[in-house]
Length: 199
Image 1 (cartoon, helix red, strand yellow):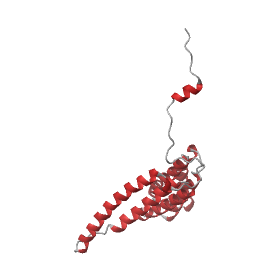
Image 2 (cartoon, helix red, strand yellow):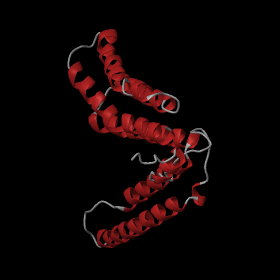
Image 3 (cartoon, one colour):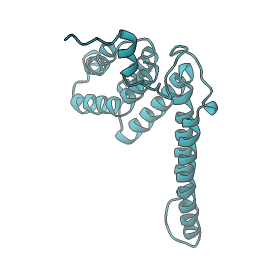
Image 4 (cartoon, helix red, strand yellow):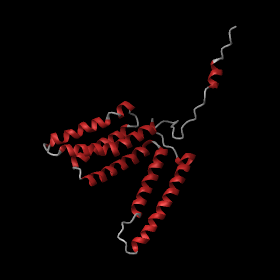
């Protein structure tokens, strides 16, 4: 005997219903969303606040020891900076749109500046790295994954042109490798984060 085949509506009802992500953009990737209205943002923010309160308590305890004469650096400025950057980035991730692009660009530019200061990277190399980072972050709103994947290779090509154009090829391999590592470490993750959020 032939068994009755279920209808398309009945078959569709048997499929698991996928719940939308708390970060999805039903109104489009360029729209601003109020993070306060998102329960996931509130939970994550409360967990981060508890973690930074513990870090602040440890920094204050070390500050008391430091005032007694111990030659130890203060941990209050690093903890305060980390808290500010973390909560700003968290707010931007849940807000999306141009807010995320602006915050990611600021963090990438400041991070590359600090990286150049620690590694003594030349100004032309850090300028090219920052330009490629800001371009990638701005283009990641509308670009495809294939296009975004080309940015590390394009950055490497532009960095190799710096010693050729300037004529300073001595020790250029060190500058180029340091600059491309900084881009992979700081600039490209920010670009990919914006791309994932707005995809």
